[in-house]
Amino acid sequence: MLKRTLLFLTLCLAFKAKAQPASNPEKMEWFGDAKLGIFIHWGIYSVNGISESWSFFNNYLNHDTYMKQLQGFNASKYNPQQWVQLIKESGAKYAVITTKHHDGVALWDTKTVNATTTIKNSAAKRDLITPFVSALKNSGLKTGLYFSLPDWSYPDYDVFTRDRKRYNLKEEPKRWDTFLNYYQTQLNELSVKFKPDLLWFDGDWEHSSAEWQTDKVRKSLFSFNPNLIINSRLDAHGDYETPEQGVPIVKPNASYWELCYTMNDSWGYQPYDKKYKSTNMIIRTLVDCISMGGNLLLDIGPKPDGTIALEQQKILIGLGRWTSKHKEAIYGTRAGIEKGHFNGKTALSKDKKTLYLYLDYKDQNGILLKNISSKISGLSVIGYAGKIDYSILDKENYLIKIPELAYDKDVTVIKIKFNETIKLSGENTPNITLKDIYSDQGEKANLKIKKIASAVNFGLNPLKDSPLTFDGFEPIIAARPLDQTISNWLIKNAEALYQTKKGIPEGHFDGHTVLAADLKTLYLFVEGQPSGPISIKGLKNQISRIRVVGEGTMLDHSIYNKLYWSKVPGIVYIDIPKDRLDKNITVIAVLLDGPIDLYREKVSAIESN
Image (cartoon, rainbow, N blue to C red; front, top):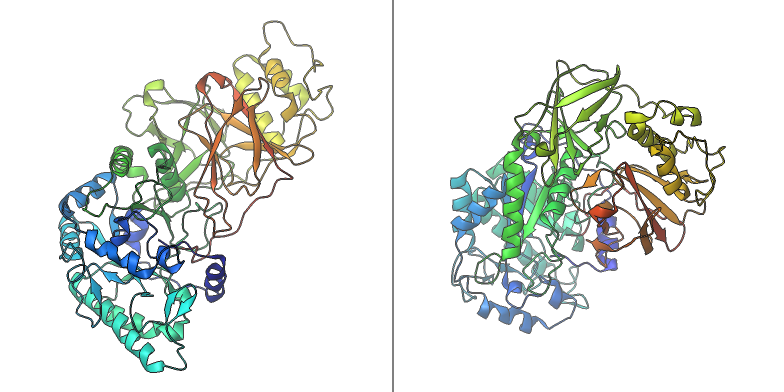
């Protein structure tokens, strides 16, 4: 897949200035409902396990050496029915397969002159797209075809490698016309032969829309299928946005969007790339997309013989376990409610009368749902038949108790029904005083600790005028000997409460945060027991160290999806050992290399695919 240099990223962004037109909501309904698709990058690059097309473009090896992989691309164990079965088992509702990447190798029987194909030129000697599309359509899944506009191997395409062009368009316009006819004929072939539901374009940054003749292309494609869905990588005119690798921090503006995402760091099969995300991390990424009204297009890269790596199969099967259990909280849902009402992700039914809460943690103290004006008519945990108890703390705030057996190992989903379209009250500014903290503790101690975390997150520290010291050495208020819960927690986590500033904006971390006065330490308030590593999105700083506040345990971290050509930071994942979790709220200190610096841009139509 694309490993774009900074030069090409700049060109790409320059070409994407135009806004996308509004999509036809009727044709987009299946896409908006689907939530999960599978991307398939299969090509000759899998033979040596190297970067798709970019390895020769960037002169990591010469073009002849790259193309010799055709001799090893045999597809000897290719079973498209098994692929489709696995895709369907994952819970995906559509698949997008590479018909031709930038290297120009067509995986179908194109009749265009001078085309390089798997039938004529590879060891496979087969049309590889036809049987897969046939199996997809027979299964009821929607068909998506990836098509590269550039063809760096075609003799009449102007660009050859990063440092070499074959010719100048203005000097040899007939050669460019030959290429235009070539690629547009291929698109017509794909339209007639496979009748795709979706076309996934890539690579339009190399030329202007006029040079690509995109208006002509679009008109031609819609003549075959007026309901065809096109992504935003055809001169930024498309039906949906396509951020890549970086999970959006804030909800995209587009009505429809799709995150294309790898399981490890590679699009095609690379045997030495073992940096696979866990199934838990993939499920939570899907939930992230669902909560913001988007789709996840999860990539697999088959081997040259057509088999799928066991690591990738395991992820798809594990993903399928969760999607099968939680169908009603996935397909057909829409973006959830605004932040601040619940510590986690949410989604809504189309009629907005059902709210889904996604829990990637267990909390024996109960789950808070705040500022809900509508009256609850029913509450359950999906996949659990038992009763779920909840109490009304006041007329708009609820405490939900989840039995241990009701929790899912990855993400638990609470379903809340209302008799009307859900109504929210504006988030009340948290207000808790020092006197409130120490009055009537007992079972309410945990609720007060959660309220303290919420208050300091907003910069409303109830302890700012108390005797609290950085090290928690001085007692704040004398507490009763048998009622030390809050005192002990405050003393343990004093450094995160002493003269700290309000936390970082929403979207970067699921939970409350505060910053040290010098902005060089980020404190994370972790409720309950996480089902996997906690994550931070959009952190541009380097991390110096991470520790558990109040007891000093040092923690490791991993960064995923940081790509050298992209300004978007990777996602920071932090594992917290279960025996270091606080029974109320665990506080994690993240020491940075300087004052905190966050990436918080809206996703654009193109990221870098």
